[in-house]
Amino acid sequence: MKETVHLPSEAFTETEMLEQWMKYAQRMEDKGYRIIASLLTINDPKLEGTKIIHELPNESSKIDFEKERPDLLGYLRGKLHNHEITIEARVNESIVVKKAFTPQDKYNRLREINPNLDLLRKMFDLDV
Image 1 (cartoon, rainbow, N blue to C red):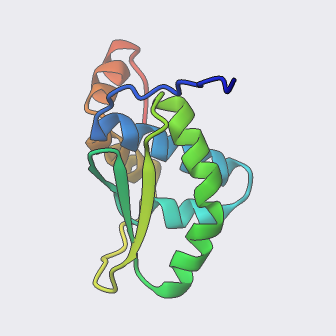
Image 2 (cartoon, helix red, strand yellow):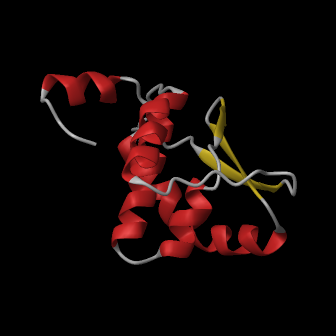
Image 3 (spheres, rainbow, N blue to C red):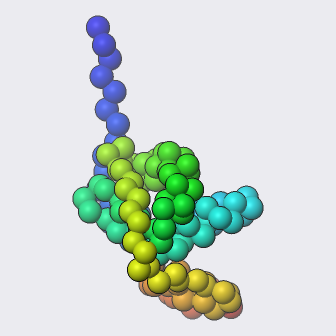
């Protein structure tokens, strides 16, 4: 008799997905994998149901991203408690690359993703 395994499929928001996506990108940056980190943060992925669509500027960046996709998928499925998540990479040559250079730029970018960051910064009287 085959045992049925029920994998979690909890609902999640695009904001929650973006937070985990950025955490994964930061983890890659911290490990020294700057190319994959930059591919992850080149623009914001969009959510359609449980499908995450990530647009990349060219075919070679898509090939590099595809190598990382299984690990990223496993990470997101675990963190968001949803094993129905899929990731689709698309080439869109008209992407305008968003880069955050200064700590203020990075903070502003993270604040766009999660406005509660501002509240925490004020609550704990933190500098950027």
